[in-house]
Each structure stands twice: as C-alpha cells, then as structure tokens.
Amino acid sequence: MLCGNSGTGWFSGCIVSRIHVLYFAALRDQAGRSEEWLDCQPGDTPSAVFDRLAASRQLQLAPAQLRVAINDRFAEWTTHLNAGDRLAFIPPMSGG
Image 1 (cartoon, rainbow, N blue to C red):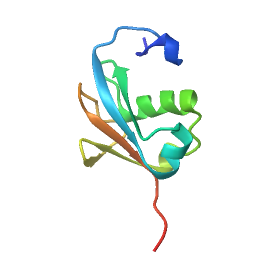
Image 2 (cartoon, one colour):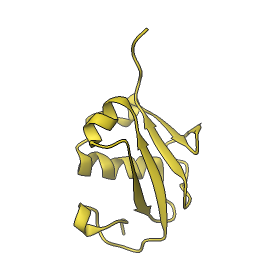
Image 3 (cartoon, rainbow, N blue to C red):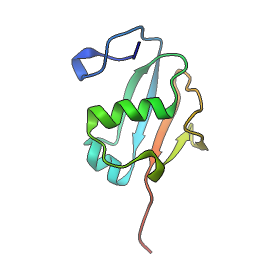
C-alpha cells in the first residue's frame, strides 16, 4: 500500500507518520512550493517518496541529479524515514 490522501492524487492507505519535505531551486519551481507535509508508511525511503512526488508534481530532475538530506544531514536514497523527519531534495547549484 502507498500512503497519502487520494484527494491529492496519492493512493489511500494506512497512514502512520508525517514527514516535512523541502524543495530548493529548480525543484521548488517545478513543485510550485518550497515545502509540504506528506503522510508516509514505515519503510518509506527518500527514493520512494521522490518517485511518488515526481509523478504527482511532474518533477523533471532525476534522482541522479539530486542530493538528499534528512534532518539537515546528507543521506542515502535508501535510508528509512521516521515520523517528523525533514526531507530535503537538493538540486545542483550554479553561479559564482
């Protein structure tokens, strides 16, 4: 089962925790927001959350182009998320 609210395009299921998702730079523009709270299940990973968000928010950057951080520390895409975690998807920065 996937988690979330079918009214927002997510599949309904057993909701057991919420995470805080942050978007930066190009992802913020693509998502149309800088942050949101999402419902998730035990065992969810940044990879699983990003896959659902990419489909529902039509995100155009691939995971290989991004870094992921959990609670302000860089993390692996396969790290399990916990209730209340702050998950950030960070695209490459340019400028000088």
